[in-house]
Length: 88
Image (cartoon, rainbow, N blue to C red; front, side):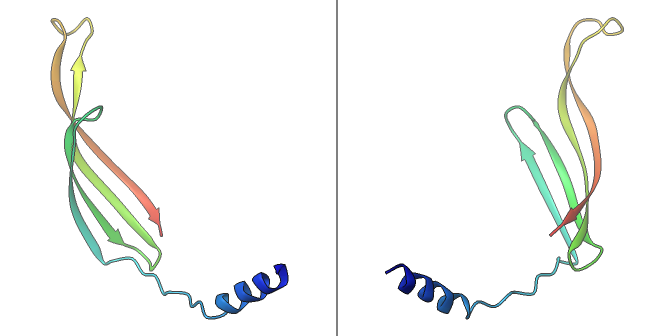
């Protein structure tokens, strides 16, 4: 029975073909976060090669101000900028 199962697995795996994967030319997106990261972000993924893209992101996140140079604690929105490579 084990030999039959092995033969069937090998026969079915012979017909599998790999797909050609390529990154899109440019993708824009908007994200909104609620919970631990409250904010809104705009992002873009730009194609560098067929398997590498560059993701840039800009947005506003919430934060609380505390410290000696502020009068009390408060809620602020701080800008966030990030740039990172992606491998697909």
